[in-house]
Length: 427
Image (cartoon, rainbow, N blue to C red; front, side, top):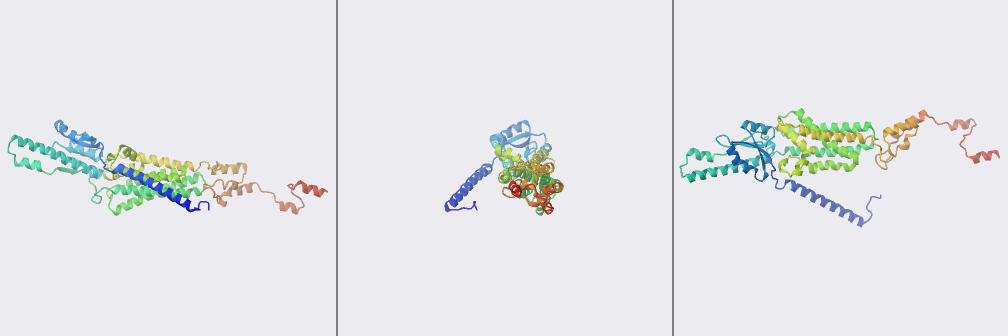
């Protein structure tokens, strides 16, 4: 075969190229992963504050230093907890009571909850130290109640905690990776299978139906596996099935559309979702802890929109998910339209699709087998004879050829004999 390596030099060049490409890819992915996840720091993480004007001035400067937090004001603790449940803020502090009170949401992200706890503790320690210094400067005796109040443990309420079976909050990342990888493999397999049949609307509908069926099946498999570990046991199963199905269709549909449009190289879209999109999806690293570019890109990929939709449906039912569902629907619709359109586009070789062939056979009587090889979607492979001869069989029935053997038996000769034969007989 022409593709076989014929010499040692060819093998060495090929091996060197493979090693060089692998090294470059590894360096690029390493730089990307470390750039996104190494020393992840918050960027304007939204938090709430319930405090008077004097108290606010004391706390806000500490929280907003370095651009770590973006502080929003609330009138009461109830308003603050409502905002947490709607995912408008990750947590907040109430300073209006006898002692400061911190509210967090572990289900919104363990990293944010831990950061709020540590920051809250540091602010309280600084505040306690200031009060102790003021008392010592005054020289007054400190009452026991005052000492107890100053040394009491900080009050913390987890408004939306993580389930006891998912204390690290990593389940969403695993589910997203499974959906991305499974969808990519399915799209690549369909990309190899579907082109073995002739282009037509029927093939497009069959391709699209297969994608939808796979999306629902993969969503059901995800839900089933979640039940093994008690994840989402209190969530609405039908809502979760719909969200997971849309995520799967967004991944498989967009990947299949790219494969249908540009060929096997389109499978790189699915690889991009798995290798790049899952890191910036917000499952393991919160969007506010990512660089600005990674945050905006991740929120507008199927993986990122899917993670946020799942998180809010599982833990924050009061939070809106319309924006995330819109992103998923856009990927699914565009991908499915590409699949349908490319199935009736003219072939690259002779510029004809199956619709063109059928019209040609009906109107001009051109034998369809003459197009059977040129209309194959794989170069060098002809269409199956039984499929390519349908038009020719119909043509022969409508325009039968004359029976030369019957004419010869009656003593009549065909007119297609050469001129020399006729001349010889006359002599």
